[in-house]
Image (cartoon, rainbow, N blue to C red; front, top):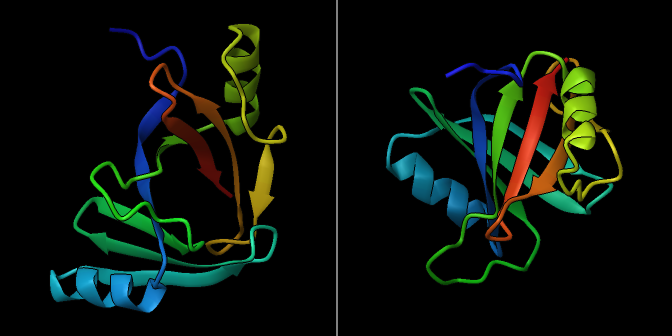
Length: 130
């Protein structure tokens, strides 16, 4: 099958939490390593990225964790060209739920991203580390 969007892999899975430290300690006990911690000023949330091998979790303390099965909030897909991806997504009439392409000061040079809604109301993020 042709990869018409230029998706190059899964960047991370987003997990909301009511207690960031407890979540970090839990995943560290399973062998995950904290690869980045930050504060998302726009959302007012503490954030941590935890990784083991090629699996990465972004956990963010927003006080809205459902504490039930189905707790993951989004999956993020790595893309090579965020602007090109955004145009393709808009041209094909997917429902963009962010304010266009947004940017955060995560990682060394920042990250650009946007999200769409899937058929089951799931959030799908497209991101490009800068």
